[in-house]
Length: 212
Image (cartoon, rainbow, N blue to C red; front, side, top):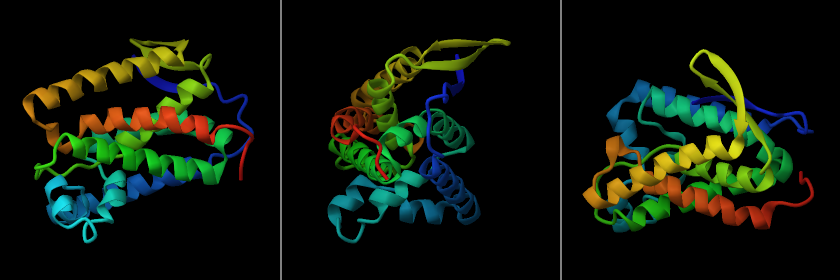
């Protein structure tokens, strides 16, 4: 089941922030490819390093949100952001959505930190922030439909199913990372869960009349 789009008929604004976030993630990935491991080591979030020098490592809380472990990691994250981010941005407004996205990313990072205090593995990716967007989408558009590619057919399924499938995958991956104290390829699965829960809770504060 591969999501390819959702219903945008009720959207009233151009999702400028969503497009800008996608562009920033692609740009960061291009710099990663050009600069190699040195760039990743410097700007990814490393739990043990952060705890040793939180002020000196403060910027990695944000830079790590725009980094990815590979093409598949980048592509999957940007696909979900493109499908679901525009509608959430339309409901929150551009400024509130920007704040919301960053807060979800921070919550995701600290959720992962809580389960990997002594880890030297670089954590990176927009997955936690995007998980927050999915949490908001479920609350704001519970009847939403998503177009998915199933085999050679395109069908519509409830957004709850498409997002729920993603959540289940993250949940079991996260449980596995706790049990084995292993982070697969630097992708922090507990961050996905923390970001989703943060997005779900923050939506109650951010939703309402459309903002700026």
